[in-house]
Length: 280
Image (cartoon, rainbow, N blue to C red; front, side, top):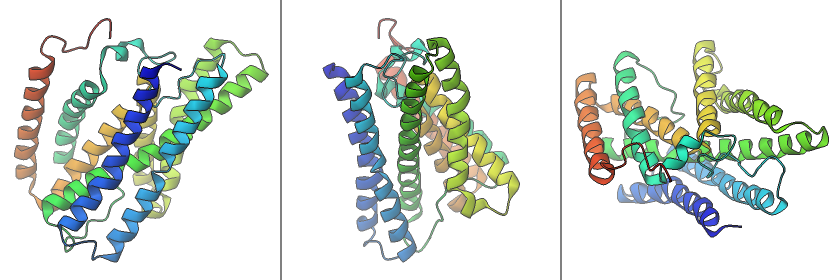
């Protein structure tokens, strides 16, 4: 087991546990604690789901030590590893997060200007936090645990597909085809099942949720890491939650300012490798 692989997996898990558990706690108690039962219940639920990261880690140790014939890529912290696109090996994780934030931030900024609803899974309780704290709470609390659940689901499916492929002696190409075909669809169905209670009476909303989660799962398969799908989820929540408190014009101005700042930071740190390093 290479040290860099171990550090990559444990580092990502630590980062997302911090984002999904510690950050909401700090924001909550900075606003005199979780005095709304709905918020407290939802925080405990989402924080508990973060156990998915432990499952991912156990699955990762399993495939690393068993030397599977179909590789060890569980699409969590294996950017650019087969069958994912090798292009993503060019980027470090901080660069990938920053670049994804610019791309998806721009996308959802413009989508938020023409749509009035979003699929964040979080009901804003305005009496609990200030507008800024509520937006951050929602944007950070929901995506990381939900994407962790999806990551554990994908990891389990991949191991199951590996075992079936070995049992029936499938080629690596056939295995890869099943990965690209089935994982996004099953990821979409997982998202659909999670949101059935919230959107069960609206077929259009459920279709959008299915497509949204299918896209997140597909991004994990293509890139080899769930980081990009997580950023997609965060940016969706961020811009639509901002519309709860601000007008379209204000959201647009704040969004443009945010994106310009991110572009400036990206250029400052990566001006000599805007598309990553060839040997990265």
